[in-house]
Image 1 (tube, helix red, strand yellow):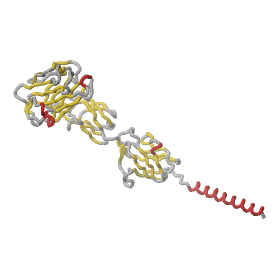
Image 2 (cartoon, one colour):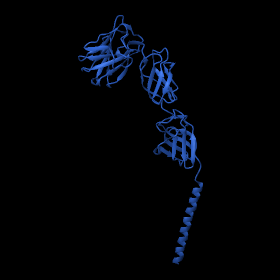
Image 3 (cartoon, rainbow, N blue to C red):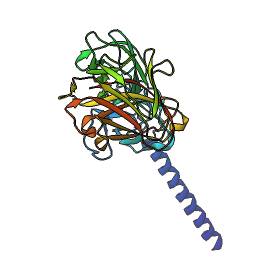
Image 4 (spheres, rainbow, N blue to C red):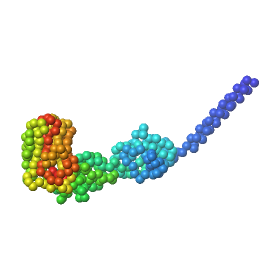
Length: 345
């Protein structure tokens, strides 16, 4: 009796194991062993709305079929991080790398256990960013270097509405030649991702000092020793203005002989200033026509390099005429400064 019962249990166990084996075989036979198919890209906020483009560094959802075994996603040969890929059969959620080879056309390739598929899709670099340009003024044909980021695919550089000749470009730098007829303009850069304009103007509408004081202007500094033919350092050209404040609150002052300059319609005072180590973090007050109460105070937050300033005239009392420009030491210390390219916009 016991033998029969034991035999019965063995038969049941073998039967159960057989069922498991058959079920396993059936599962393996029905696993969707198909290559991936890619149909669309969405973002995480609107998962049902296909996008025509995205940007570097975005999180996206790649829609399609047979994606559950995804183990690699690359964007124009740049691999996405393994830790930033999440897949099921119909979608892959992934973060685009921060830097890609092309400014716009960066195809997406998804690789699964059963093959690869590529979707030609626009992944754009961010809009261009301009950090600075140099020189801040010059002549027709002079080379201007624009520094910033996301300049790949640059299609145009303009001085206001006038196209400049592009000499060379990299992701972070553009060299152009100043177009004919330009004495004053804002510079714009256009890439597939958009257009950006400089926050400071190139050139001047009215010049006070470049390599020398313009006729009618003179040095009338007080409590300071000032040279208007200093040879080093200079921002541009061969000369700058050097001022050594001999007492606290001394001032570099430039005065216009009569008649006063009518500055109705002008928008800003522009100049470049260079401070020594003693000037780091120190203040200079800028005012017109001897009216200190309407002045604007700047801080020299770097030493040993030229700083470019463009101060709206509304910050200097909105004068309509100009008889003098004063740059007064305003930290109560003895310091030395150099100034170049002084004028109005």
